[in-house]
Length: 169
Ligand SMILES: O=P(O)(O)OP(=O)(O)OP(=O)(O)OC[C@H]1O[C@@H](n2cnc3c(O)ncnc32)[C@H](O)[C@@H]1O
Ligand SMILES: [Mg+2]
Image (cartoon, rainbow, N blue to C red; front, side, top):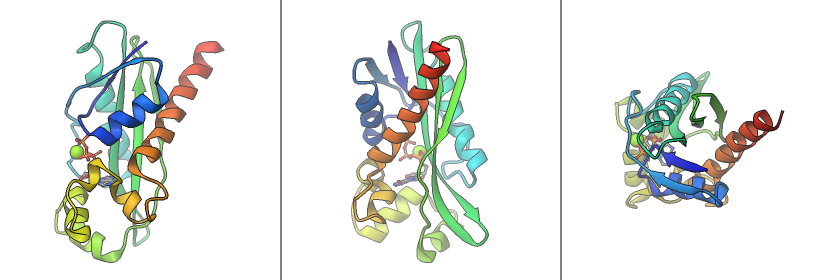
């Protein structure tokens, strides 16, 4: 089984390799065709689906596409981090799953309101570089108990499991 991941972000690629460790995993920077900072579950999920679809046909034939997308969404006045994944099979069946979500502090959501991207805001907040490619915002606000890679690994496991269930039944 060959997998193409629709991102060059190492945290996302490692998450896929972790779950599909018996497969050949390659990566390609494909467009999500949603905003750089998705603002709802619907938009974040769509970004994941668009990335996964864009991976089909660019790798070797018969490859599977996986898209992983981070975003934010409101519940009432509270902004949450949200994450979505999509797996597209060579015959274009689509599986989707969402990941963990945690509330973001007001200081972060105020910055996002100005039109900034979370990846940039969290780097300034932590005085670190490329948090998005490492522990992620989820890692920062969980004291690294759950990293971005671990969170996406869980999403990929949900995708793989759904595909296996459908394949066997
Ligand atoms: O290269 P790509 O695949 O685009 O990787 P990315 O880090 O930009 O990730 P996304 O586009 O999926 O995420 C959309 C935005 O939300 C940010 N984001 C979402 N979840 C995050 C997390 O856990 N840690 C850091 N940034 C996060 C991310 O940096 C972007 O600004
Ligand atoms: Mg991005």
